[in-house]
Amino acid sequence: MPRSQRTLGAVTPEDFARLAQLRRMQGLALGLLGLMAVIFVVSFALQSRYPWLGFVRAASEGGMVGALADWFAVTALFRHPLGLRIPHTNLVSSKKDEIGSGLGSFIEQNFLADEVVHEKLAGISGARAAGDWMQRPGNAEQLNALVSEVALGALTVLDDRDVQDLVEALVRKHVVDPEWGPLLGRALESFVAGEHQEPLIDLAAARFEDWLVNHPEAFERMASSRLPAWLPSIAHRFVDDRLHSEAVRFARSVAEDRGHPFRIAARDFLADLGRDLGEKPELRAQLEAFKHEVFDSPRIRALAATTWAGARAVLVAMLEDPRSELRTRMTAALRDFGGRLLADSTLQYKIDVWVMQAVEHLVRRYRHDLANVVTETVQRWDAQEAAEKIELQIGKDLQFIRINGTVVGSLAGLAIYTVATLIISPLIGAS
Image (tube, rainbow, N blue to C red; front, top):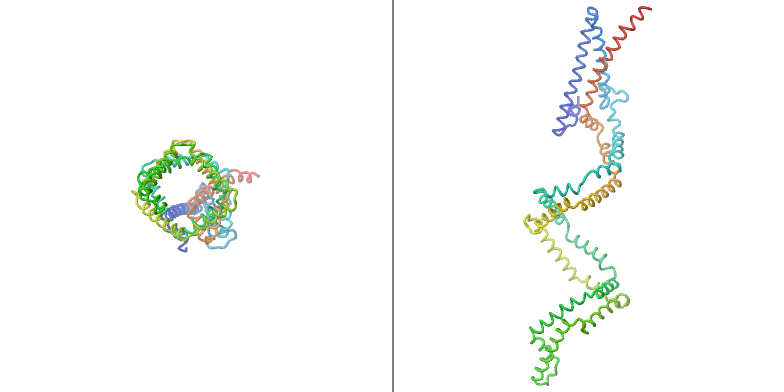
């Protein structure tokens, strides 16, 4: 017997355990056949002296026939019995591809059917189980570590230039290429309609007043530089003080008076600008030219590259340190999310439905491909290897066929001999 048939391709400890069980069952079946043969020889030799041994001989004869027939049937599944190439033997090897195709079709129609998948998923609350799992000590940290490792792997594998090119392509497609004029016009109109410019004017007026009060000399130098040089210094000081006081008073009045003309002018200016951005082609063209000039600037691209490099270095450092602020917050967020999953039945239902729909869609779309994995795997097997793998898995159970065949054959032989001896023979003798 070739070595491969002795081990049936067993490689793992579980395989060798199955092989040992198979050999024990084969030994038991062969032992019963041997026992039937011994009983047959003894009873056949002594039945003339002890007529009742005829019943024993018939039972043992039937047992041998049943054992041999079932041995042939079981062996014919996996190889040629006694090496004889009898038709319709070595079935697994010769029908390997058909078996793989049938197995894949069986899995597709019975395990991946829509109703089967839906029924299975409907009985599982994955969201609640996930929430319970994340609440257990150490699990949130374990999931955090896994997510961090995946993120680190992605950051390590990704080439900085590829990331920059991808980001640039996305920004250009979704931000730069679309026309900004109409969008900014509508945004400004909505901004003014909601009077969102008022807090900004409040802030600007207050900051301008503070600067004027705290830096009078800077304002005075700026005002004096505009006056004629031939004016006497006392006139310079008078004008500077007067202008400074008026500027402070102007900033304070803008901050305090909601109906100040400057506020009205600012509101009208923004409203007109929003309308013009949507209606005036020349203004929109100027905005587009400015936009492309800014985004196509080498300095902006260099700034983007530097920003990504710095952000990447910070992310890597924080993901590598289990005690970093990022990792700590991620763990806390996972625990909080697990608690919400346990407490919020509505959230559980939404997530379970979403997962169910996603899985059903994937199964429906890739069901045939999943089944083909089984079919193609079996078809790639060597014919003998396939027979050995299947025999290793189910061979032990098939030996019960041989054992049952021995027992059933014995009972059948005894029954036939009994009917022939006790019923048919007296009838024939009477006639």
